[in-house]
Length: 442
Image (cartoon, rainbow, N blue to C red; front, side):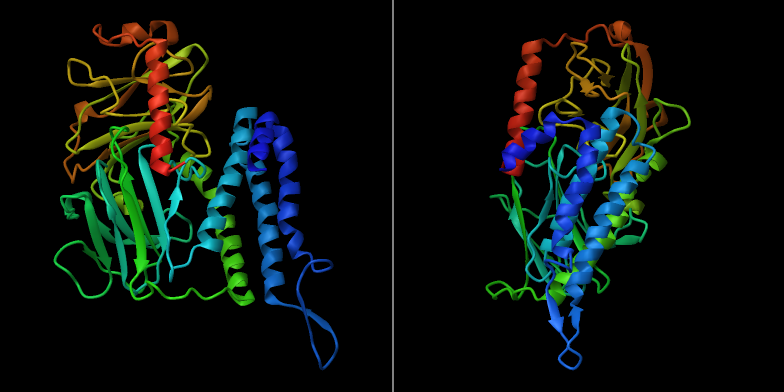
């Protein structure tokens, strides 16, 4: 049934899809209809029928579905056919994220939620495997697994969400340089409890979530694994949910869906959209906003006609990972398994002068460093430089963009830039797809 639903989704246009969203929301809300499906309780003193709190939580969650569909339709990004279709998909992705995050996860019996090819949240990096779990502040936890050939492994503890309107902050960081890994790749990180000399993070009472990043630069690298346990709960029987428990989860999910759906398109407009199209910000540290500590980023946007292209020039930085990606106007990563919408320094051709030249274009220019817009006229550009640990990028090596006619791309590239054949592109895409399948176990 799932595969038939996917095939149907691909066969309809964006207006058709948006017409179906209210029906989807309504079907999700059927169980909230007190007249036919809701559990009820009888007041023995009066004989009147009273809805239990779970009914109200169901109703509120159903209302949140309808409200956030309206939010998508009212967003300035909801303009062209491609953007409307992407907006409808973005809504579904944020619903899936919220269901997994707020309705299913349990801080006492934690298992990581993964941001993968299905949930492309908040300019998710195609080179990373993000793992999220709610935690109870002050409680002890153990993160364990194997680091194989990942370029970097990062752990951060949050109190709230620094990037959301409700606010929050980072309360603990363990960078790749600080994580001790055994010769066989195994590691164990303790959170909370008595301080340890290494592989330890405090878990303050205000903590709400832990996030782990596995960062890949050469995509054929070995795939490690990461897991989490609340110490003392291993082997315990997990209690069954009560109606009150589920009502609380539904209320939390409704509130978070209302916050997260308008967040990312607004975040993109505020952070990535410059006064002049096709420009980039100077490199800056995103740590204060909840990003990776010790990273530099440069953000920008592209706006291209069919016969235009952008040449993006970058240079090697002090760290051990750097990558560039494109996103849509909803701040969701573009298709990265079956199209080349991102590249790392390890995947890219490096010019003889040491720089990297990437071509952002709607069609293949026949060079290795093509970043495929997938036909989108507008979108966002993100560059990440990890492990720099405070070492600035010299101003003359800041990333820069040059707008050129598509037919003059070769004139804007170094003369020694090699051609890239259709067969080479096919093999590159095949390798990307295989790595993503292995990374996410799909």
